[in-house]
Image 1 (cartoon, each protein chain N blue to C red):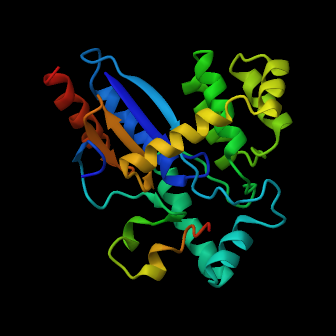
Image 2 (cartoon, rainbow over the protein chains, first blue to last red):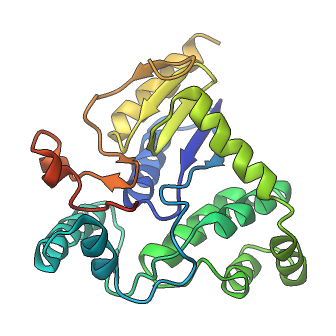
Length: 211
Length: 41
């Protein structure tokens, strides 16, 4: 069973949704073999690689809300994530442009390690305050999932997978996908958002029963 | 309907849309609350 997932690294609901999806798949046991492919979606393509300031500074500045209110909301998001076993750290988070991270995910896909790379990037961004806009930092993380550092640096600096990222973004637009995470199950059922594990399991079971 | 897909699941599941990441309790609130977590543009 193929599941295509559109998501962004800098998307708190995408990491939460990933955990809920995994929980749903786990309930299926060996009944269904699920293959996941991640597709690129940029929530903020105009974000600079280097933003001087905290996540609160960025969000408050763009939304015009009091910093205290933004901090409260981030605190609530942190609590939701904690409920899924995720340790979000918005104080350490380094806001950045995620295009190079998406290019790395495509490189990882070419080497068969995209799921591990996706997990590593999300953890690095939301839990560990790593800077995912920089090639050197991305290369360090790529090595952890078995990729060759020199190749990663070379391909990211060359922009080899920039076209693949844009193709994903364009496909999302053609499909009318306006929000992430968005899941396409077996090419015919769409599931939008960080749904419950039961919903994900139900969608996969439904699609499997019709194969 | 989004694209060629039949949509399954709850309508109000949390998503990030155009850089706005709504919290669960804000789903039915005003737009200010919806945007509080992540206006990114």
